[in-house]
Length: 70
Image 1: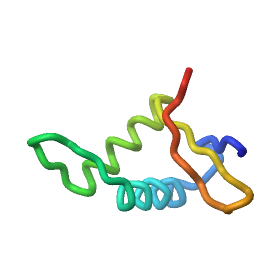
Image 2: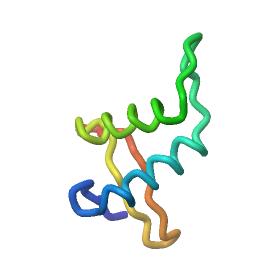
Image 3: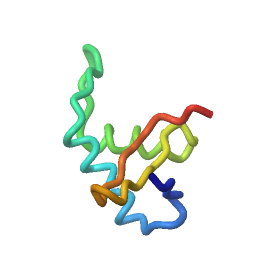
Image 4: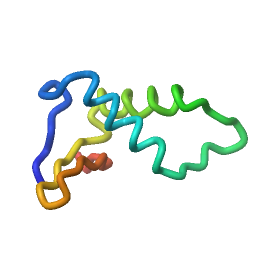
């Protein structure tokens, strides 16, 4: 797996990765619901803070979002 830095891809590509992630991930947000846009923004913020990293898998040719262990 190869780490992908957000600065190395277009904003459109990053937004597409985040949208695909939010659409496929089942997440419990408690009693308060969040819109799709809010969920995407939360993930973008986590990436910006370095809490979530992007990893490219050459075998599957896909990008995964992974919590940082730093």
